[in-house]
Image 1 (tube, rainbow, N blue to C red):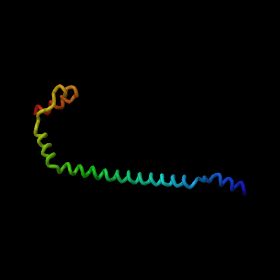
Image 2 (cartoon, rainbow, N blue to C red):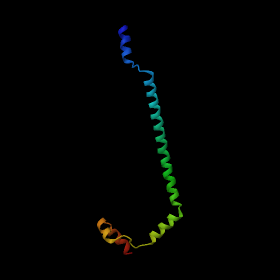
Image 3 (cartoon, rainbow, N blue to C red):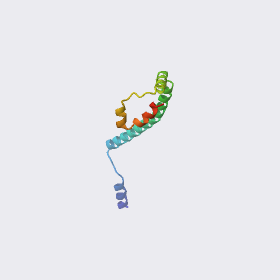
Image 4 (cartoon, one colour):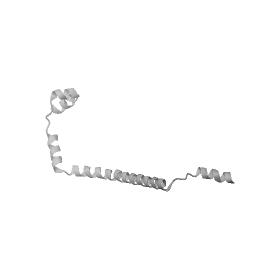
Length: 96
């Protein structure tokens, strides 16, 4: 019987009260941080959606984009476009 009690006591890890308190506080902090990260992740999706909607209703930007689409000439140097490999793509736009 005594060896059974010794065996059980060996399995039970006794730790000082301060160590247990620090471990509990650390676990609570981790849970709180995880909860905050999850909330941020959810609100980020909503924030991204709101930015998309706001950008679509921004009249200044939509007017500027219309002007860019109406303008068919290239504003970049042809030599730079050839170096980047974009020259052929831009050539088809300027011939219209």
